[in-house]
Amino acid sequence: MIELGVNIDHVATIRQARGTYEPDPVWAAVEAHLGGADGITIHLREDRRHIQDGDVEKLRDLAQIKLNLEMAATDEMIAIACRIRPQMAMLVPEGRHEVTTEGGLDILAQEARLRQVVARLGETGILSSVFIDAEVAQVEAAARIGARVCEIHTGPYAHAFYHQGRDAESPAVLEELAKIRRAGEAVRQLGMRFNAGHALNYFNVQPVATLAGIRELHIGHAIISRAVFVGLREAVREMKRLLREAQVRAK
Image (cartoon, rainbow, N blue to C red; front, side, top):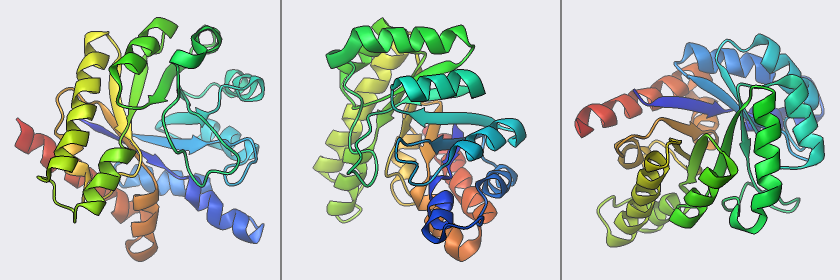
């Protein structure tokens, strides 16, 4: 059964906008769990624009479901991950001026460095994941560095879906979905776990959720946006329902 990891970064974004103590990301993690989330994702950025170090520590101690720490492959973040020991650490590219992650990690350009990072995380018992574009060459590089999980970047698919009038059968959308499918097949053939995420929402998620062998989707902004109107627990419940429906139809 496909799993849902809920990214709660933007709960912290609201808190940081006022420089106060609420809303609390730990409370958000509990609500997401009660709504059916299988994991919690947070991104500790270099500039600490939303999630703070204390949030990571509290969530590691208090969350009752899997914690996935998104992080750049810097010495600072590696040291934090090895100290806190989340269940999974996902290596992502990071730029100070980006609003959100803009593309996949270029493993090919830094294989030696990333192999060392993955090895160090593995020594502390952390499952290593990499966020990469839907390119077979990047998948193969992920296998060479020892990554256990590949999260395929679904942003280009999501953007095509939106710009094609939310037409799931348009050629542009089908082309992007096929790229994700091919990348996922390569991930599985190389013995890694096939996850996906980025810009997925309540309208575009089901075609991705039907892909063969997909294990987990990470979704944040859409769920937090829906939660403004229906509450976080219900927003997660609605997304989980869509994933289950998609997988039933795919059988």
